[in-house]
Image 1 (cartoon, one colour):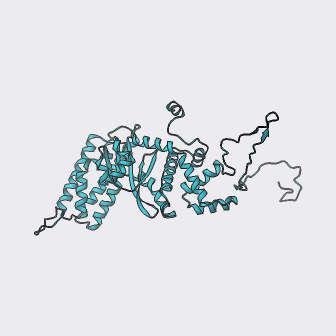
Image 2 (spheres, helix red, strand yellow):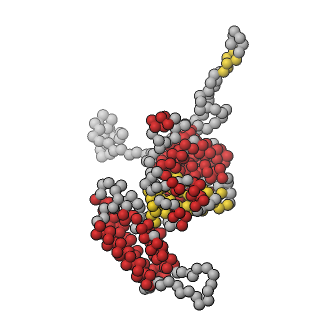
Image 3 (cartoon, one colour):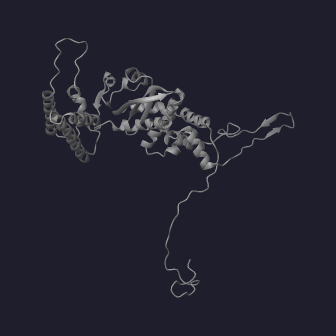
Length: 395
């Protein structure tokens, strides 16, 4: 409040206010751990001399322990923000003046995973029943040994599992693909085709493969450049159609039969042109063991011919994405974790991390606050895919 006029110096003590200007400063309050001490009295009966002790609250089970908010924050920093154990403890010390050991961080992660066993069953079942699922796999290190991380994703769900193998044995034991009846979107890894569900191939991979073929010989591989443009045109046409169709669950993609026929014809024409430009390799005059080596262009043409339907499935089914970017985004964060922290020290730690990360990724897709969702795990009320009424009936 001004005390005197800036022009004439007159006192403004009794002057009327004619307006105000506001400015705001956002700041953190002092950060500190709050310690709550619980005491249970013991009393001796004057009649029989029996000692009787009061009961502590159910959630207070140890002499000294951390509460659910602390455990949720530590799990958030370690499993969501991907801070290593040591740096998680250091950050906690810098913020609250209290250092957490690596073992404490690990224990909180494992407690979180233990509280998510039922959720893991729920998300695995929900993914298996989805109409379209994106699958991917990548190298995953546990105690310096290479294993494989497998992911199964939808726009609302994420499921992670690790296994010593990459192919069919792993997919069978993980247990989603053997009974899956929807559309599996993937990068054309051969083990996926063992399963009898419908398949759709990642066309982002196809675009990269076509680009590599074009760059190897632009004049001879003109077909690859035209194929790349054709895939882009189909995608753009579908995106325009989606704007005009409210029910995206319907098949047909909103494209007319004439459009579908034209795109199919151009696809076949370009494959034929590519096969003329890249004839099959001639057999050597002296027979050699094994198959005759093919060029990258020949292999790509063979794949496009063999998996014609799977390559263009996105054109016929609105539910099917053009690429497999959803699965790649979901699996990328676990690769980031490996780059930051290195390998997991134990198989149990890897299992716990995958389960917690499945939960975090899923609640984010559901639009739920991650920190609150993690606190719910430690209070015994994690986010559930099954409505409470159904869960009570099942119990």
